[in-house]
Image (cartoon, rainbow, N blue to C red; front, side):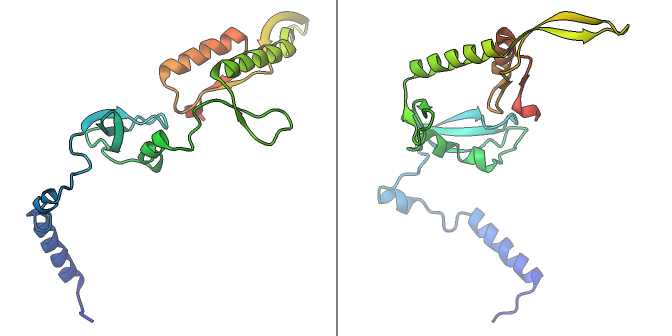
Length: 196
């Protein structure tokens, strides 16, 4: 076995790096002559932002024929400087996964399996259930004790059975709309996941 010192190992890796940088071993003409094309050849590179959390990491999307063929971290983005977490790196698989649901799923009470339903049916079910819970848990007044010890009835007008939580994938504008909706239906319980 060859006895290599740490200094000798660093010299060897330095020489290897210079050889690679000079182009040794990366002659693509042979591959091109056989008809092989690079994966990213002919792609449009589009800068984007990852939607998995509120971090705002930059992505470079490589699009060919309207389809995402590769993504990588954007080195010009000041937040991630080209690095990606595992969730962001998997965005391509998320976009084109055959297991990704394309329609709302519903499981009836007592049933074991989910079934696909239409978007109209899902929205109708959510609206009816929201109204039902709101009506059941509506609190019109509160009884408070004043600083003098006197009991007083004051208006409350809130739905205590409904809470709303945003997602890390929800942007500022969507969070604003969710807050407005929570106030519209009368629930004081609304929060955003990015703060938790």
